[in-house]
Image (cartoon, rainbow, N blue to C red; front, side, top):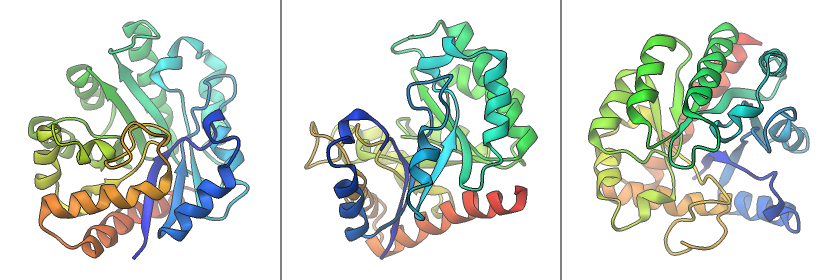
Length: 264
């Protein structure tokens, strides 16, 4: 059994002391591939994920501007994203999107930066990794206007919505990536979304170091714990862990590796 952690932040300070051990634990747990999200601390440095990917054959990277850092983006930022998108191990752009919970950048700035990144992704034909928090309606409106359903696709990272949001995201051609949230007993809406998600649109992630699954909730998350998320998905869907692992791994490969090969 092998798994892909489709979204983790291994570049941060929280892993500075034991990053190599964390990666070794993930591999020992059956996590064959990790995707290092390349938003880092925001512009002008967009290569946080690429630096990790350069060190390990089994780590891939994304490039993008997180909504928290939207106010740091300049015109040159998008040229840099487009340039880095051509690097061999970049599999997607992001995470990008909207976060109205913290509003570290004004909503209108977040929306403008989101749209600009979607334009770059369309040009380079790479999937996008979407972050949305308390902003579902605006997120879907922007995607409907600026992201073709028949295009390179994308991932609704750390999916936290319910059946309505799942159906809308699926209708726009997105995969749903489930994190440790799906293990939380009170996340009933997320449980329902996990049950209805088609097997060929299902992904798993940790978002490490955030959102550790039960029984690690409240502690630092790490890629090895994606196994627990996959186990909970299997329980909710009344499927075997092996089936969920095979489906999520195959889905990620088709979405990200095949798409990457076709554009580079």
